[in-house]
Image 1 (cartoon, helix red, strand yellow):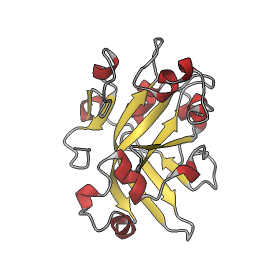
Image 2 (spheres, rainbow, N blue to C red):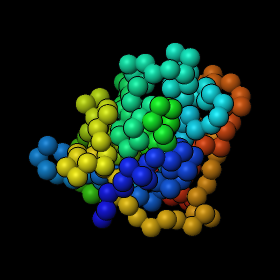
Image 3 (tube, rainbow, N blue to C red):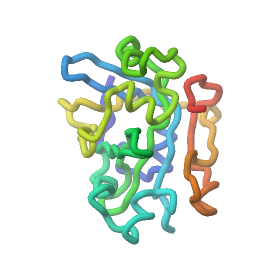
Length: 204
């Protein structure tokens, strides 16, 4: 397989998010073991001319970087990992042009390699529940704050995404993003969530 290059990520989140479907997210553990899953669900953030009030980069500090969000502002092709609800890590890939907040949240994977290790990290959950949500996949692949800002394109990196053939448009579904709380319209209903049609590993 071939790792995705920075050029792939250096496009708007609304372009990259559906293009990531079918690609494989890979995590190499310190002992060399590989854990991986096919990306089956994503969400795009901050990819608009107007501020995206569902996005950390636009919502805080009048759209300027903060210590938490500065990774979102570039360069493309690095990991943006943040903590939420006081208990969960969320894994995103930074997209777009440097200087503007732009990222894609990886929402769900279909497990491929290292399933036993992922199950152990997920306390023995069944296969379909190992990575069918953003917090679940981060736990299963041992992704946390230590990986914030990691270069996903580096040949010796510990996290990367392998390329795969593009999927036909009719295999991809779109709809509103999930878990936006009290985010107002129109941002609440923007169809910037993308998932593989009929895939059983898409988040609930």
